[in-house]
Image (cartoon, rainbow, N blue to C red; front, side, top):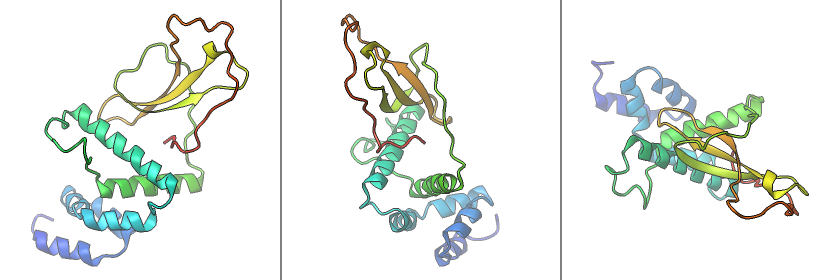
Length: 189
């Protein structure tokens, strides 16, 4: 691969219209991965083609991916090096496409992971990516929990924790939850 000019590699990548072949090609070497992933406009168009952003759930997934990317950049210390990160965070469209395709494949093949969470004994360190209320009807408010996804280190996968709500000095002994709340729009991935 060291002897093939970059221009030739770019032409090969541009001529290939099969996403599966391009993703497979990106696993051959670092140089090819960089070349394939650098075609951001192409991957953005392919992402839009396969996962239309007119669908509210797809918008939520992309928003969650963007939040995770921002959190990784902050944990890496890249936020100070990238001044435009907060206004319009950079999206690696190749990474987004590959991750979204992998999630879809695992879901359809029944290879998704169900997490059994225990209540965290200490407050997790890192950046909280999302929180989902976890309560049941007619339960005391003091028993209410939140399932939270945390990114603890930039090179690790996000982890899920079940956290007990902290009511502080508020007396919750005679308070009960009237309705069970949950969100259908958050992605537990």
